[in-house]
Image 1: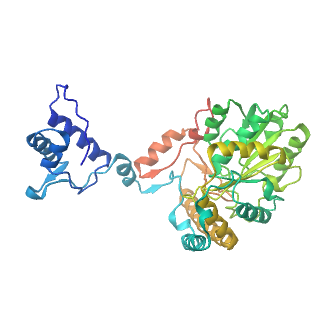
Image 2 (image 1 turned 120 degrees about the vertical axis):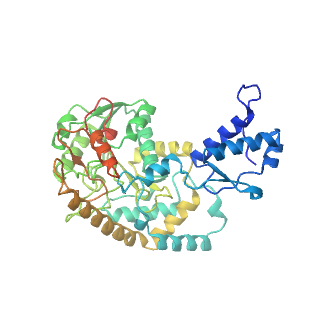
Image 3 (image 1 turned 180 degrees about the horizontal axis):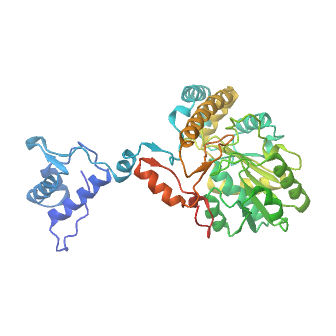
Length: 420
């Protein structure tokens, strides 16, 4: 049966109300193509109306081509009706705005193996909640993984998160509790940081547009400030901060007590010729909070990330995590098994090769277009296109008409920034 709200005091006929409601469900995709509607007798009994009322509503829908009446077989939703989002998707030839990775990047077989091994080995603990900081075996595995990135981490200062977004929120919450009042962000950055900052009551200030001016822009920042950076394969510009700028920022952090929040969600997707060390791996990084994630590429549906934290912020971070709830136990055990089996590097290597090939192909195709300019990134998934004399929204609309979805730069700018 289908529950249909009827207003019996309304001047609109009941059969029209039934038809209207069913039409909205068909157009929304709630009732899919070829789905059989309830029989007129059964629906009439359920709704407390006459069978004639239901029959009239079905005839009304049939006249619009929304359903097909097949005699004694019943009424069926007509073929070809897609919800708006799917219709929009079907019109695309290339969707470069899709936030989730292609399925061919996922280490599906290795994950299946980890899931089977986890289910075979684990007992009741698999279904019990874990401490807010996360499964100990997973935190040790993450420490060893950080060592491969050159980061001198310790498992007692590693916390598991439900993706990088939660890691960002919890880091800023811990910093807010430590007395931070001002957040510095790049002129173009991950847009959810503005929502989080507003929810925590943090003042947001923008860094200079050019990275070589960052240190100068932070000249008056101190222990009540934190700067949020995506230093490697930046979202959305794809750029990578040069080593000299990283070194100078860390020196400023040590000198003035400035906190640095490093978002390294894409840091392991390097396909350039030279390694790109994390800020947390460099000297003078004691006041760096590091956010890593496997959700952006290898395990998008598992939503697992982690944070490497300074000792004096760990307790505050974990207390905030306790309020949001621990990351699901099954997810943590599966990823722990995946890491312990040595599957991560295998998955990352395959993903790097695929993404590098895709980026090379995209850059080659775009290279023949006039009126745009871009710099191919050293890693990651973002390619920033400059369109002199033309705003991003105009390019988005022009690309849409040709079946290509892209994202305007304005989506990554803070309040008051326009024309990107």
